[in-house]
Length: 388
Image (tube, rainbow, N blue to C red; front, side, top):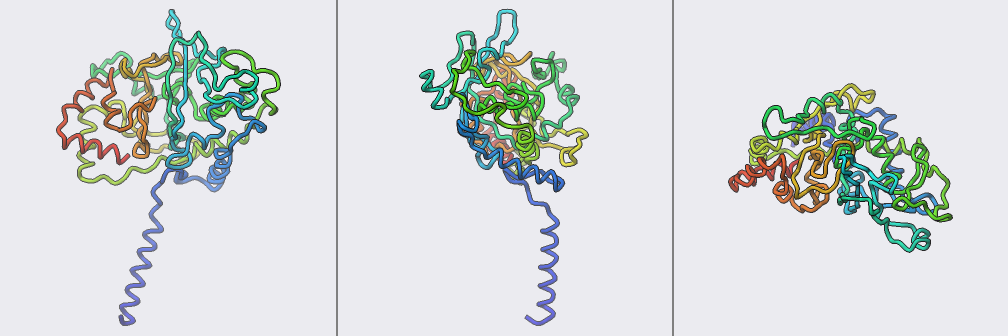
């Protein structure tokens, strides 16, 4: 190659390097949001330490717990992802229609593990359900990717999507759940928890048995106080600033970017709309004004409306909050769906198609349309979903 050819090749390589450098990296599971400031990125990185911390009895875990650290549940395919752990929740639907979360009886989360000290004191291997519980349900571990964006969706958006009386006659009557103080919920399989900070802080106590400044007392054993001497760590077992760092990791975690669609996948997107999936799994939502620029006024490919929908008697398990009846569940976000291997709130479906075929209630019509699809249409729809 002569000098001119060498110069030309070097110029092309230089241009390519500039173009590649100018294109932001596509977010992978566990990556931070684009556009964070240096300080926000620092809190994200520092939060990994608390997300990865495995607590011991001496540092506060338990005496009742589901896992000894956030990473023990949220680890697949990366830190912040889903996991293999399932747990038991329970409540009591009273004759007057009130849903009792059994907070004075250890509810609504009943821990599956105990420390050695509690086992020796009471002879139990897990927290028993109290006789007051009328219903219970299994809950799998969700991923928390993109949860900061969901937290930034305005309440007005959620309310605008609701149609509790099915006024448009399409058979879909989504409605918000409300926390016990009346605030609109959005996190959890029943959309009980209003804010991400409450969701994250609550996980320390309910999942790990780690007391916090806002919840400085240990869980009871189905309502009975802990025996003396089984909890050596002083309360609260984690301070607010460290909770804030763990919250920052979750808040600033990016949703995985969808894969580029093939021609078949593009047809599947059309099928997704045509069979009515998009009536609940709203493809995009927009965040509102937010002090964090990376969360402010962003389009989110969330595929949810954050509302409760009746999923039919086959999936029904328990009530929760002021409004969620046993058959009602929040529309599951589909961000990062391709990384999941258990589906629905209890993980009973092991394939996306299996999950679709278990949709009932308000989804009866969409399920019937799905079952009536040609093989080619069904293949296209599933390829689209596996791109998310």
